[in-house]
Image (cartoon, rainbow, N blue to C red):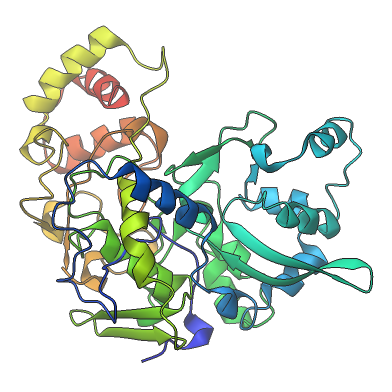
Length: 410
């Protein structure tokens, strides 16, 4: 079954994760027999280039179906691009361009400037083919990469412009608003996409037509974690990489999942399978970022760990070195505190292959608010309060802030 293009959403979630077997894929496939071992650095280096630059041939969707090259050329100035959360890699900018921006000599309100940035390969996660036609640089093709959703920048040059931070969820990115710019979509479709908001995306919508966007997750700190998605559909990163590359980005290849009935083939040449081992190696090399110095109270965090292990009952599920039991079990929706979904959406687990949820690993928790799979907790304080209320934990006014400080220290 090839997905109906009017429902096809093409933005990578979870960095582009999926199962590597040379023809199609199923949930039993695996890229490596030892995904817990430190990744090979040579393979990881290859994966870095794939993560940042490979579109898997998805230009066929973004250009031929959505006509996003025409949209960019007509209305997407750098100012517009930054307003929907796109990022610019400052290290891809030549010194002369940097100087011109600093001197205010670059027109940030002109789509021609965006095309110039694409020609420099400076827009994170967006790949453009720029050709000189009748003396004018013209964007003839555009596609996206894993980095669009799962990289951001450090804002060291300006807001939205800086050095890349691969694996960090781009929670400023508004994928729905970007897709809704396409002239190929109806008003009703655009209304759905525009309803998602920044930092959210629904990777099931193009199949079940239910509108329940999820937060874009980070792609760091996953070494040793087998259930890498919120619902634990696959046993390694490669499963979801294939799912996203084929069914969401529009890459050329095949994804098959008997548990959900998804069976998609794009094109006649597989541009996905051979790249999955290297892509997974790079993702597994991305360590979770340490909390910024001074961002938490060490003594309170120490007390909070006692709450985490004791009265808070957090360690019941957030166990072991990775602070997750995801490698051992999944959990029924009735066990989690993040449901019901916002705005009356159906249970996200009910739309998945497992119908369950995994316990999220907590490394780098400070970096990627909002929390829970649906973003229903805006802060770590909200997380603690939600658990305290729904699990009837009875935490005191002193225990709750201490527990928050511990979470900030992870």
